[in-house]
Amino acid sequence: MEQEVYHIPALLDETLQGLDIKPDGIYVDVTFGGGGHSRAIIQRLNGDGRLYGFDQDADAMNNAIDDSRFTFVYSNFRFLRNFLRYYGVESVDGILGDLGVSFHHFDDPERGFSFRWDGPLDMRMNRNATRTAAWYVANYTEQELADAFYLYGELKTARRIAAAIVKARQESPITNVEQLLAVVKPFINPRKEKKELAQVFQALRIVVNGEIEALSDFLQQAL
Image (cartoon, rainbow, N blue to C red; front, side, top):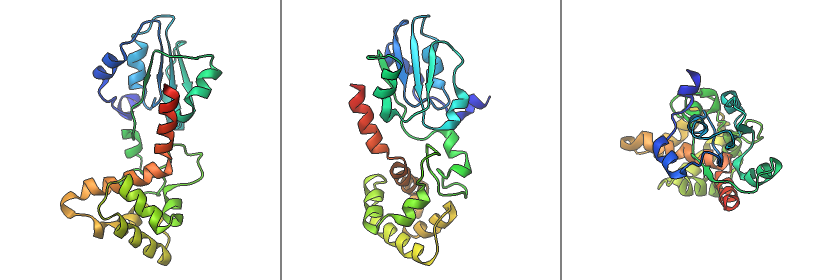
């Protein structure tokens, strides 16, 4: 049951159709998560087919598929080429990336990905990483924060939010979700509160996990 609610695989049928799976092909799911996409791919492979599932979140390891055709790779997908070469793979028949955050992350207050309840400002996909969202909130300059909220959150009030954070952190550290919400809510449109708060958290998450850089590395290696 836990694997079923970890995350609902997005556009599953369309994804399988797009991959046009060959029974004896080699495939990569670079965002393994709950394994929903991967299980569906495995079902379409014969004994010669192979599937490699990447995930940098240790929680995803609990969902690893017990199948000789499957290999779980505990790593960020930005290291796609190195790990596939380690396993003797020089080319593949298809690669799947379901980018973003899973329901599992949003539903765990301790991970700090959601504004729905209080918890530490963490947001690390890889919990071995040293810098949490709280670190960036405490150490990024006002300009860096403004750029992040504007570029990755598409917030028109990015500069005002950044200035408010810098002012607030001088008085008291911002280390949990409720503290951050208290600072940013005055600059959020009440009629679009959920949407704009999601944009604030999305921007921080992208920065914390270096998602743009990782995506660039992944796409270049995928070729």
